[in-house]
Structures are given as C-alpha cells and as structure tokens.
Image (cartoon, rainbow, N blue to C red; front, side, top):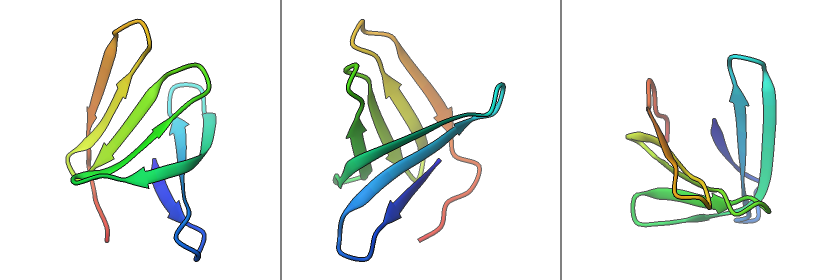
Length: 72
C-alpha cells in the first residue's frame, strides 16, 4: 500500500491485495501522530504507519500486516 500526496496536501490510500490483485483506492486519507488513517464507505478503517497496516472492520475484526519497507 502507499499513501499518495496530490501536491496540494490532499492524501489518498492505494492498496493491492496480493492473492488476487484486487485494487483499492480511497481518497481523503489524513495524517495521524503515527502515520495516516482512511475510512471506506462500508465502515472499514485502514491505519498505515512505518510499522505496517492495521485494517479494522465495522464488525470488530482486525487484520494486521507488518511493513517490509518504508520510505519518507
């Protein structure tokens, strides 16, 4: 996944699920103390930091994935 800056300070989230190459692009990611967070219309929240990705579903399920690389 990547967080993209459009040059005007607006951020978006872009992710790719490796098992089936499903793409997800979400506008309106915003900075937090540790990285970025963005919500999907279904209520799922994506928290991105240098440590990795945390996906929290509206039903309470949480999926985490460690980062393998991080860049400024």
